[in-house]
Structure formats: structure tokens, C-alpha cells
Amino acid sequence: MALLEMTNISKSFFGVPVLQNVNFSVEEGEVHALLGENGAGKSTLMNILAGVYTRDAGNVVFDGKKLTRATIKGSEDVGIAFVHQELNLFNDLRVFENIFLRKEITTRLGRLDKATMIRKSEALFTQLGVDIDPTMVVSELEAGKKQQLEIAKALFANAKLFILDEPTTALNNEEIEHLFESIRRLKKQGKAFIFISHKMTEIFAIADRYTVLRNGEYIDSGKIDKTVSPRDVARMMVGNRYSDLSVYQSRELGDVVIEADGLTGHNFRNVHFSVRKGEIVGFTGLLSAGISEIFQTIFGGLPIHGGTLTIKGQRVHNWSIHEAMRNRLAMIPSNRKENSLLPDASLLENEYVSEHTLSGRIQHIFAKRELSNYNALKDVLNIKANSAADLITSISGGNQQKVVLARWLNTESDILLMDNPTQGIDVGAKAEIYRLIHELARDGKTILVNSLEIPELQQVADRCLVFYQGQLQTELSRAELTEENVMLWATNAIHAAEVLSR
Ligand SMILES: Nc1ncnc2c1ncn2[C@@H]1O[C@H](COP(=O)(O)OP(=O)(O)OP(=O)(O)O)[C@@H](O)[C@H]1O
Ligand SMILES: [Mg+2]
Image (tube, rainbow, N blue to C red; front, side, top):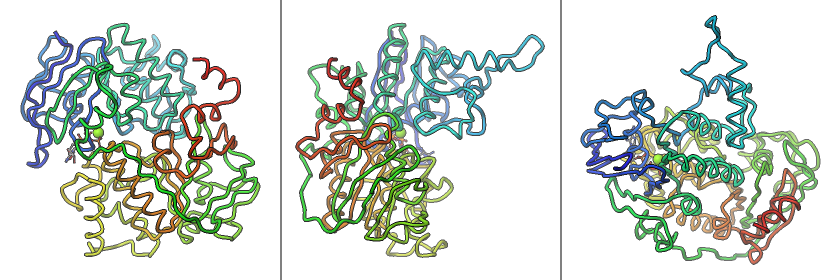
């Protein structure tokens, strides 16, 4: 008998059906990939399982017992742990306080036993290969560490089934490998995982079986083995919108518009590079490579500690985000929830916030032009939403990211800094975004893309700069841009030998 059996699950939001008669089952000791394009209903199905939403119809049987009145606590009690797509931590609490929330250890006198909770947190992190200080306040952790904490917290629960809803969007490759090691170890103990990801390499590295949803309907289930290819899986997810044809096209380049000369700042040092108008340059690296910080410095969000930065021929002094925006720079930051979204605002407001900040038109009415721009981009990016007036938080994670992209595509910016731009975006829309990036470059815009996904860089970049611990290691041409080469340079020499001998 399966560990989890969900049958004929249906759910509507405000009369709009989101799931229709969906069947989904998970066996003990397996990693089951739940696949589907943005807005297909994956997170909703998981929220129903974890008691966050109530279902309109259908049955859930877990570990031989029928789950009738689902509540969050009820699902935790029967052994279901949930790592949400959007992080769910208390930023003002310390790391160990988050782990032991509602499970606090007390001394015999009834006081909180902080020492024991800190010690147990340390032991947990050591076991998972995670480097986090349990006494730190969560708000001080960088995004990747927060995601690791969220996962560690779930794995700490003595659950039978773990739901991981896009657990790796903020992790680097080494952190992902640690996570996969933990998953494999727990699998051996019979634990089961539901794994949601839009990254094909991850699905093939970790999943045993898959189930595909499309438009809220069950499409197919099967084994992940030699008979299926990443391309098959991509097709199942997004149907005909998927094409693995190369969209790359070279183009004429203009003058140098960004020049870093010995640039030194927060987490990076002595970096030299220059970028020409109309160019698309990839940036990549593994552990704390410093690339996000370089982007933030160029965008005026972090101070320059040394060296020079020249933008459009002007050496930068007293740089600030406002100055950067006035000089038509745009930034898509790496962590959507914390750095990009206005949660209480509508889709349209989220899309236009940058343009309005620039033009001083903070207050606005739904201008016709804005709405028609929105509709055009909505079609191109396949944004799944009912109305532009809906709250941004009511659409799926990948669709939120598309709105963030649309926000910057709407400004008149001519230098775009894209930090992990396709986080959480399905493989169909990714292809559209790559096409758009090329269109922008052909129009003379300059684009810097930070990505850990080599296939992504191969689709867009003219060349790629590889970083290791805040230092530029090398520049790879398109011909040299392979997974092996990037690994070689993104690690230090000792590390590189280790990787090659695997
Ligand atoms: N609280 C809500 N209110 C209204 N509509 C919602 C709500 N939550 C989800 N939806 C709608 O349900 C549909 C499915 O969303 P869901 O988040 O399950 O998609 P998903 O498959 O997880 O996509 P993604 O890959 O982008 O995360 C979407 O069209 C979304 O707009
Ligand atoms: Mg989702």
C-alpha cells in the first residue's frame, strides 16, 4: 500500500477551479517529483496535503489512515513535514529558536534550556553539512542559508513524508549536493519525499518517480529511468511550449559601458572586466562567489571599497540606487520574496513600481497604456493570472517571478543586471525569457546575467566570467562554456582535481 494516496482532489479559489479530480500517490522510501508548469497547481495540492488549504472534494489517505479534517498541526502530527516554496521563518528570532518553535526544550525548573537547543541545532547542522551559527538572528542570514535552515527545520521533524517545494532556488551547487546527500540518507531509512523543482538536472539526479499536472489536472505518472529523457519530462510539463532549440544569436557591439578596474567591495576584490553596449555577459561561480554583491555594487546598493567603476564613461562617485536608476540601470535581485515583491499590492502595481519610482508617479490609476503593456507581456511570458488587479501573492511562485521580470522590461533601462532571473520559472517560459533577453540586446541594451545553470548561460551569454570566493578566475568564450570548464574554474585547484576524479 502506498504511503500517501490522494484521490479525486478538487479545489477552486473564488469559483476558479485550480485542481480538478487530481490523483497522486507516493510510496515509502521514494523521491517523487511533482512536475508541471507555473500555475499548474503543485503548491496548491501540497498546501491541501499539509492542511494549509481545505479541499473542496476528494480523499487523502496517509500511512493507512484517512485524513478527514486537515489542519497544519494535524498533518504535522501524522508525520508530514513541509518546506514551503516561499520561506516561512521568523526573521526576528534566532536560528535555534526557529528550529525549536513550539517544540521548546525546558529545564526541570521549566525555564527554556537554550544551551541544549543550541547544541542540538549544531549537531543537526553538522549532520546535514550546513554551516550556520544557531545563535544568529535569522534576518542576518543570507538567502541561501535561510533556505538551508528552512530545510533543516523540516528534516529535524521526525516525519515520514517530506514535502520540498522548490527547495533549491537560493542554494548553490555545493549546498544542493549536501541536500541530496541528506535526502539519500533519509530515503534509506524509508522516508519519502515529494520534490518540486523546475530544474531538470535536479529531477534526474534525485527523483525515482514523477507525476505531472497541467492546468490543475492529472496528466501522467511514471518512473524516472533510462526510458525518459529531460526533454520528455520538459514536454510533459509544458507541452508544445517547450523547445530546446538554441535561441542564441550574435550581434554588433557598441562602446564599453561598464568598466570595473580593480573593483573591490563587500565579498569581492580586485575585479577587472568591461562590458560593451549590446553585450550579454554571463557571471557564474559556486560558493560565495561574490557575484550578487558585485551586481548590488554596480546598482548602488553596496559601497565601493577600492578600485574604480566607470559607467557610460563616467567614473562613479557617491553612487546610490537612485543614481543608478537615473542612469538607467535596472536590477532583478536574487531573492524574490525578500527583495522584489510588494506583497500587499496588485500585479499591475508590482509591475510598475520601478517606472513610477523613476518618474515620480507613485500614485497611479490604471492607465490604458500600462494595462495594454501588461497584457502583451502576460501573453509572451504566459503569466497565469485572472486580473491585473489581483494581489501578487495570489498567483503562483513562478508567475510572480514573471511579473518581476516584466517590471524591468517596462522601464526604459539600458543596462540590466539579472541575478538568478529565472528562479522558479518553468522550462517553457524560460525559453521565452531567453528570447526576450536577445531581443533586448539587439535593441542595444546591455545585460549581465548571474546564473548557476550552465544550460541557461549557453542559451544567452556571449561570454562568461567565472568567480571563486570573490575573485575573477577566468573568462570563458561561448565555445569554452561547458559544465566541466565552469566546474574547473569555479572551484580552487585542489577542489578541481577532486571534481575531475569523480
Ligand atoms: N490563495 C490563492 N488565491 C487565489 N488563487 C490562488 C491562490 N493560490 C493559488 N491560486 C491559483 O491557483 C493556481 C495554481 O497555483 P499554484 O501555486 O498551485 O501553482 P504551482 O504549480 O505551484 O506553480 P509554480 O511552479 O509557479 O510555483 C494559480 O493559477 C494561482 O493563481
Ligand atoms: Mg508553486
